[in-house]
Amino acid sequence: MNRNLVQGLQAAWGLPEFRSGIRELVDLDEVAMLLAALSDPDHDREVEGSLLSLLRSGLDTTEIREAVLLLLEQDEVRRPLVAAMAEPLADRPRQVAAIASASEDPAVRRELRAVLDSAEARELIWQAVDNQVNDNHFGLIHRVAILFVRHRSVRRLAWALRRHGVLRELRRKPDEPPPAH
Image (tube, rainbow, N blue to C red; front, side):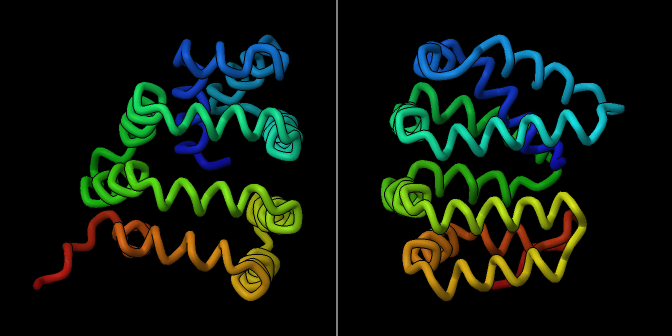
């Protein structure tokens, strides 16, 4: 599982505002246990599967999805979360700046909400995640292509992220110099 995702989840979990916002909707002890297990570099695939299953059920539950999206609208939750997720990317300052810029854009957050509100898009996203976890590159590319073809909200989100340079910086290798203007 992507270490940045794990660290981002741990950062979110470390924010009292985040935990209190979803306290009544999820089993806090189960999440804490899974995140602790994931922080061990020698964790097994079963732990990753359990966390992905928990994330999936959370995003598929309207109340949890809405609570998380509302929390991300709050500057005091979103900014520390983005900062914590950026820590492991210290060697990629342009990527950090692009992600921070995109997170502050209400249009990006609106498009993210539109994508996550679509059950079909969420299902395709989870299929793509499963393909990535299982190193099925063809399946991953296939699911992403279907997402772009079938869901205008995914295309709008990608365009919004592109405006902030997120896509460009994700493609750039860590040691690659920035483009000359």
